[in-house]
Image 1: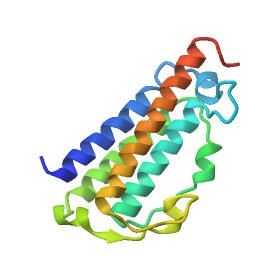
Image 2: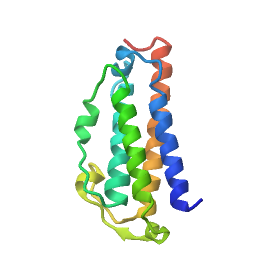
Image 3: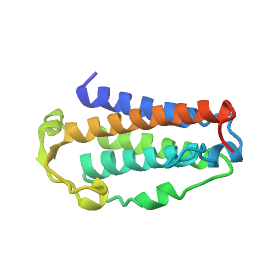
Length: 159
């Protein structure tokens, strides 16, 4: 397995865990944040994590012409997680297709990403490998947030 395939497998696996954490939640459970200042709903956490992965993998690492509505990710909601499952499936297909044409030496290519995909802080020079690692780190962080949010909600700590 190549390094790109290993990174792809790790990222997709983490994103599958994010979406799977929504299983069993009804519309209220998906969309209600726990009663903790600054907390996000499970749906928002998953939508944001998928939006970040799409922007950083397809847009930043692979240089595809993608757009991102980061504020929209934090305002998102849904009666079911179906739209997020569909977004994950589309991302997996797009990632697979893009990764098939990448030379492993491209992982060391240095560049400054587009600011609109980077996020709220100033973009800085990174490698393609760092872009993939950022997605893995970001998805892991929010998977933890999502798991804690579920625990709080299922324990009765949310309204």
